[in-house]
Length: 331
Image 1: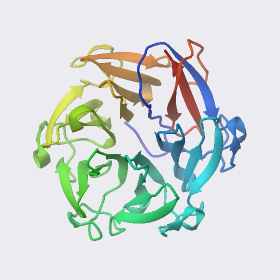
Image 2: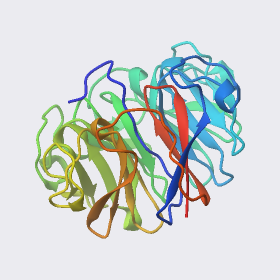
Image 3: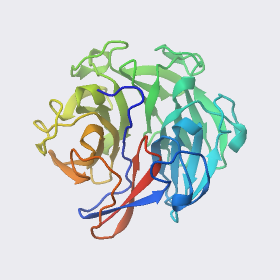
Image 4: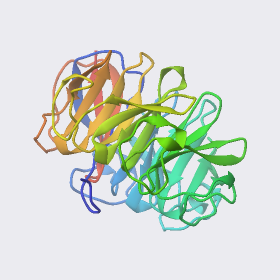
């Protein structure tokens, strides 16, 4: 199980279409934490968590322990997009705003960023011009539904936005998935404060420390149900089922018998494939047509080695807790 202080990985990939891959370091120095802007490995991060890319190929990173949102251009140039670098909850423009350990980040069709500002118990919005506002949350921990400004979140970690602008938030410590729509917050799935492993509809389902979420085809949500070592699926109607995974371990093959060990990051591509950062197995897994395969990394082997394969379209992965960003090229 994941514990405070453990180094964690997660993966965010954009428009995946092929198989062979080449993993390289895009930005940050291996083993060195900091908040230095610059190009490539001259820049530093401090426990980078969620990541998302825009249509121009820029990456936006929730740099957790620096309390910053960083930007990485396709050329690998790192800058601070928003945040003062000190813990806080101030709205404002760019570095005049502040965050408190942001974990998750998502982007909508207009290029607005949404941030799970975890230790502020808030959901924040950042416009393309770096204007930061608070979208939802009273700033105190809890699972209270209602008007966005009065709602409470319990340790929000993952965040996703659908094509209609609805925002979904996974809450790691309270075991629920929340929905923000039309200025109101509701509990979309999961039983608050009750961990478990139950499929069902809405609050009748149970999760055990859901970490990250992604929007897939037909508006379905996919959740890394971390302590259950499973990937869960939630339909737009709130019906929860197990999409992949069984018990803790490492097994590729049919989704129903596959095994993960602390899955954390997740993303979905336009073809319907799902990619998962499988933390304790030290690899990236791919779920396609009901089958789980290892997409990158050597299962059971930790390290920062780059892997040379064929180069193609640029894709991006992130390794949490080790202060640098990896990039996948593949055909």
